[in-house]
Image 1 (cartoon, one colour):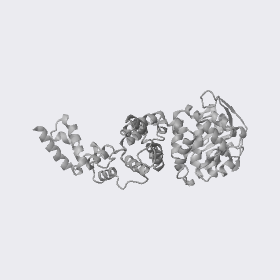
Image 2: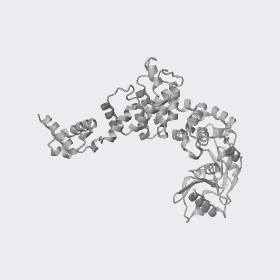
Image 3: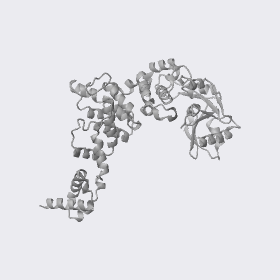
Image 4: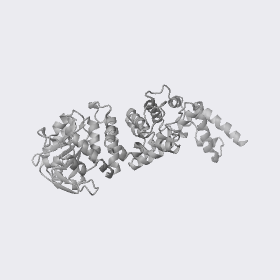
Amino acid sequence: MPNEIDKLNSLACLFAPHATLYAVGGFVRDGLLDCKSYDIDICSQLRVDDVKSILLNTEFAVSDKSLRMGTVHISADNFVAEYTTFRTDSYDGTSGNHAPDKVVFTDDILKDALRRDFKCNAVYLDILKNQIVDPLGGIDDINHRTLSTTDSPEAVFKADGLRILRLVRFASELGFDIEADTLRVAKANAWRVKDIAAERIRDELCRIFTADTAHPELKLKDAHLRGFRLLDELGLIDLLLPELASLKGLEQKKKYHLYDAYEHSVKAYELSPPRLRWAALLHDLGKRVAFDSNNGESMRGHDEIGAELAGKLLARLKFSNADRHRTVKIIRKHMVDLKGDTSFNKLRRFAVVNSDVIDDVCDIKDIDAEASCGRKPEINRVREAWQAVKSDGTPLSLRELKVNGNDLMELGVESRDIGKMLEALFEDTVLNPDLNDRDKALEYVRRKRNKLDK
């Protein structure tokens, strides 16, 4: 990343008469792992007001982020870095507030290192000298692919329960092992995650669920699965996704399923591409409720029940309305043509009506089948119908018809009938795409109008 390095060197030169500027955290850790880093954190003993004075009338702009924490953003062109003054933090572990209740700025880099979470994130790079400063032995952890805390695990996790989720994320994204005592204490303190803001939990879970994409250089293709298993080992699935945890031990018919409902869901998650991980994990969320509602005789209706449960779960985690509605829709539709006996015309209609999610529904059906019996289906009839729709010019909405309301008015269709006429034309064109021709569509309207007149 030559541009970032150049900008950092320019910054360090500006700081040099007053202080040493350091890069720290992921930027340094990932560099030592020969990985690309996306976040640049820098620090020194300089207070924010001094930084603003130094950078006044330079190419760098300074914008406030959290002055109480001594943090600002420094930017120039496409370069953005987060600057924080060396500090120590103290927390009231009984308050439920995971921001430090006391912040003291310091000139001591060791004290700054101790307030961080993991040793691998407390390695500093003197930017001008290009020298590593390692107050806590973080390089050993990086070399040994290990995660351990900067202070006692009890103190680190008591300060901020989110660090337990970050522990899982770093372990999965980087392929690091977790030091035994750190893992033990994290498990004992997993309950602290319940006090974290839903948005912070959501963001960490999303990064864990896409951990295999974080560092392609490391080729950790199963990182997302390892992250999920670590969450489960720590008890975090039961805490954060209890609806999913309820599927544990729920047996399914051996004729169709290799796993119980929970392991089937995890297998579907493992097999799915990043964009579908939440939908795959939650697609059978309704099976426990459906099983109980049907007196243990079947799981009929689990798609509708699961869609409702998933909607509530995603709302609880503060997902955007768009993401939530899309995932819920995929879950609601994943059972279409279960027995393979739906008429092709009905499948064409289904593909058109659900064209916004149809590719995802097709993929989920394949993933669901493979996670059930260990192999992909030879035929996906929903996908065949969708491919037919795409190849034969079938309109996906009224706007794609070759005629519009004005055309119908010119043919003498009453204004009160225009909407119904266009809907009828659309429905018939989905089944007979040859109708999506202007002359044929106009002839269709004439015939329909004549019938109305009679």
